[in-house]
Image 1 (spheres, rainbow, N blue to C red):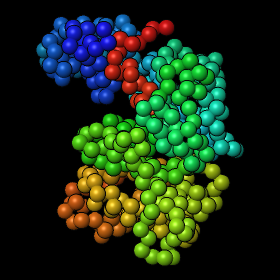
Image 2 (cartoon, rainbow, N blue to C red; image 1 turned 180 degrees about the vertical axis):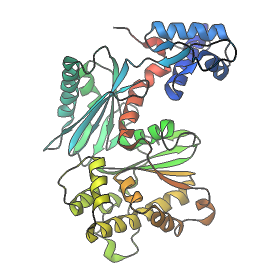
Image 3 (cartoon, rainbow, N blue to C red; image 1 turned 90 degrees about the vertical axis):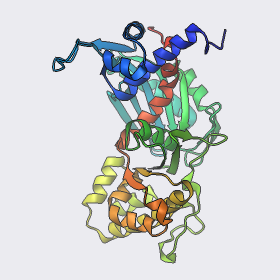
Image 4 (cartoon, one colour; image 1 turned 120 degrees about the vertical axis):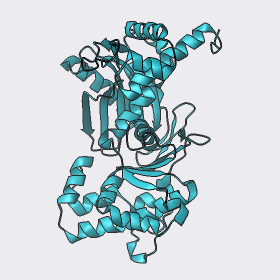
Length: 392
């Protein structure tokens, strides 16, 4: 029977999911706290925790010795040995990390490439890196349950087909199938910015915020994600949030660098690397180089990009009326170069009532946001139905 929703088995699975999601999202907590949050009775929670422990998904720890009120309650935490591989292929590097169901990232690696990685090469790198980490002991005792891939392009929600990743030069790439064949693990593929938005909504700057706009700046350009009424918005095919492909409004002709270009042609990581005198760099290195520079051309380029970015953000605020705008990647660097200036420029172009309720901030998860978002996609089936877990 496929539809177990109304059966005892269906209720049981939902309750297992409820408990596992709580310790995944909120961290370790006492059984008493789980009882209060789930609305289930103490014996039911104890049974569910025992079953999740048997499945290898949670661990029980001794009660907090500082809690001397009432009967001591064991602490339940997500098992740190349960991991997903997270992958972000980009034009200059493929970043791979192991992300725990408890939120830790015990190992990550940025593999720089001197050519555009193909879907096949990406799948091969994932499998080789997994095998190398396993052989070296970096994944000793760990259990990998899946692979999540954050791709800078349009990803069809129904089957994970990468329809178009222009900077990687991928069209209709069956990345999920390639990775599953190479690794033997189930894979999930999503747009990098949408996954970053999801991560920031669950664990970062957007935690507890129901309406937010997220813009991600990476080597391949600018993407975005939307959370409306607490739900990630994908659109009909899963392609929502492509802010980078919009035509920017540029008030000053001297600010234009790409005639007829889209937003990501004007607000560009490559242009920042150029003025910083860097051929390539990860996010922290580029941010540090720009912050340390006293060169007038660096300040001028950051100011130019802030002006154009402000118009894009103002359009988003006017259309979507979010309470929070979050900027990640090199866009966070652009914003932090002069937050007050960016805010003033956005305010000058938005409806006054809409601007009264919006804040502009940067991604709290930093360079981990895409890794955590990709891992969340890979962990999603397990969190939805913990009984699918295997101890193999």
